Length: 133
Image 1 (cartoon, one colour):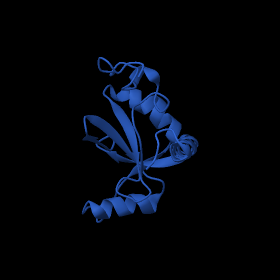
Image 2: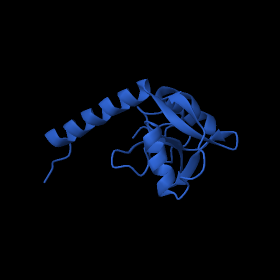
Image 3: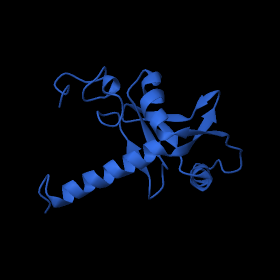
Image 4: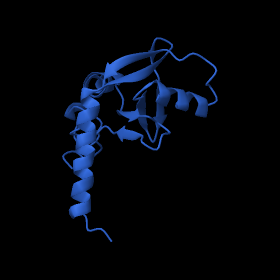
């Protein structure tokens, strides 16, 4: 049994922080659809889909049954997605990296990941009782 905040919890938080830092510094592939970036809504959050490389994007396309069509994409810094694109959507949003992959990660719209002004826990989309949580 893990005690919240214990050594395993701290290790996971450090690992996530390292992954977030790496994501922010890395150019990822963001599929383009209809003049915009490919997004999907899940759990009341709009997720921008990003991929670490062309192979990850291809695996995603094949899993969706769309491996036979051409997927155009842009290379975008992770920091730009989190700091600029997420707030520009105007709804609660985050980034899903390598969706459907065992190595996939999500960067949800919470303080410390996206700008506080659009974070679910502190910003414009915070629900009563969660601001500052």
